[in-house]
Image (cartoon, rainbow over all chains, first blue to last red; front, side, top):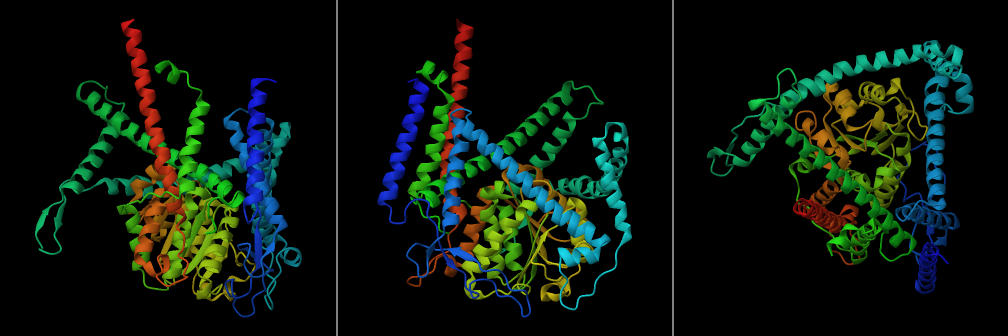
Length: 307
Length: 293
């Protein structure tokens, strides 16, 4: 037996024995989920005349009154646990289980986005405007006494532009698909230009115009004095912005004083990237924490994650 | 020793990281976080609004960012419920719908079930709004131009919360919990600046440095990543001790999910800092020995 195979066999054996011991000794079993039917008083009350919602179940501890084993949720927890282990197995080496899980995630995400896009974009925004009678009879029922709206033919324009995009699939007529793209690019550029100037350009220049010496008034004695911390913060911010801008100013050769200021600008940029990277690391550790929280809590029941 | 460290298989580092995260979780170790000015600004704005104010909650994240953002989203909803604010849930992300459902189930239907919040009077689900920046403009100015029904299929005009609201710009505050595009930046650009709607943001860590320049003129404050969530949870628990630290026998305090996740953060960060230091020492000593050889 190769060293590699021996390693995996040992890992699986340890895992299986651990799971068996846990399943045998834990009063709630491993990965089991118990639910209780949600009473109307539990859920947010509906206003009078509202359409009643479907019966819902909420998770509950095993011994709670009315608790029943939910087979679907139990299977769900097991699938999620095995898929989590499958993803984590990539850290050791690429393997078929990881590939399977990765493909499942991509497929499910694409399928979900497609379904939501169809119902929320095409049906709820476009088809309902063009054929209100059909859509309201089929997919979006009207409320009691609500009149049937008239068709809005202006929505033919987005429909035609949308269809033109598909000409990309026909090589000889692919040039037609450039028209709707041009419309999208033009509209987006127009929209962005105004808000960018207002929110990012002018707004952030305004945010940088800070007093370099900040005076603060003591609320008790009423004495005005220099707030050193805030003053230093403001001075650093203004100097940092000026140094970074100098680094990107290429109309003057970066020699002498300009070179030194530009170098300070690089340091400011590096600190910003470092801060961004540190935040990213924090996010990734949180992801790992949550997966382990799931494995140790909901699956193995070693920690309490009921809330 | 140096040679051993130089040739160390990276999988041992993975194992060390696994232990650095798993052990604090098993031991229930947590780490406190002092309230930062940016988080305080968001907390105080929500706290100082009169009871029953109208708050839009733009939940723009999907399950892949839930680990980082869900604790703060829960804290925001809890705060709104405690202040009896009216909540308008909306999202620009199709994959955020199950997230909003979980928020409502956990906080409104489970934790605060005794308050018997009424759908349409205390909270409303406006659902997913496709169209990114254009959707923001429509939502801010006139919701009915885009949708006439809520996420449950009810006519907006039939719901008391919507009767005198045309657009989100008429509300008292918008809190955006953002994982990326479209999110906080777009809400500030297309709703905050153009309509004057006050915006507070909770964000994933990776975009925090990019959002900071918008404070304070275009953005009230910023709750950044898990640490920001813990700060907010702490401030909320201090403000409402009866809910989070009840003295009555048998009362169950509300759990602060962010605080549970901060212990592993501390140990994992310590491990990373140690590894960076060791790596740099190895690099520098290696370079020095090459030069002297």
